[in-house]
Length: 321
Image 1 (cartoon, helix red, strand yellow):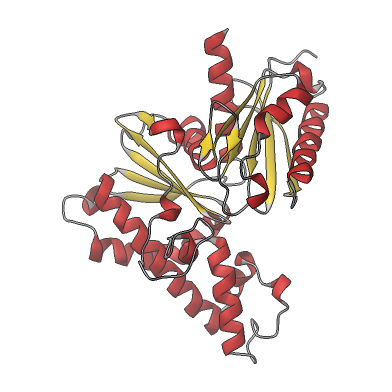
Image 2 (image 1 turned 90 degrees about the vertical axis):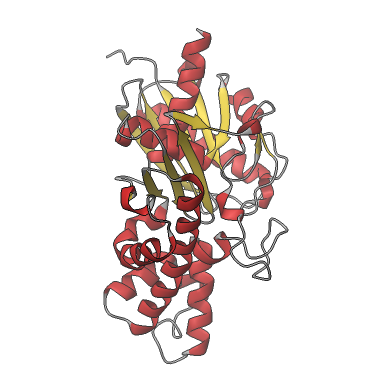
């Protein structure tokens, strides 16, 4: 059986690297996930093994792909295919991730910000042309953002717009690896939730969180405990949701979007956060903006950024062709 031209989209996160292989219709031919390494070489090898596995799953070789798209956190140099600064994956600072992979796969590799990739994936797979002005927020190891303005993806200069995880919500707040203080992602990311859970466990040593080893405390576990009625975890989720809602309210007032889509791994637990977030939107967003705002979680946060990365490279390759 002969497949149409296939493309791989990769979402390079602080904890996992995920990838899909797809065609121009959005049909998925395979999905794979590997742990993010701790050194540049380990990360390169992880990505290469993922590309080989996905290609094999579709019955082709890597050099038969139409192209590979990579979405990664942090400001990027799109022309050089380099991540300039990745606060949550410091091994990738100034690392030419795209050219390294292109040399091995022998196909076009395009690097894009991961939240922009999630935005493009949502526009392609879920949202379509339903909204003209909307934003995407990804809740994972950090917080990413993207915007569609008047129907067009807004990239800013060099593709580095909407680094919303690094807007400060407390000028004297927690230090951030980016070099600033009080960044939103120090309060409302998965990393922040884990840190809050460890602090709560230390304050309440007789609680479930207090009895857990550090490595066992994850955002997913905290959310599970809250859903099952654990009071300490529920209070933590309330605090987390407050920080999340404050940031979303700020963005709503700035951009007046029709919709905000929530992606990233934590979007799977959106039902736990939505009530408190809705209250803060009502309290803090200006009249004339809040009444027309829809906030919703994406359908499949595990693959949406991968689809976006694939769409970005296929559009570039097809335009050149």
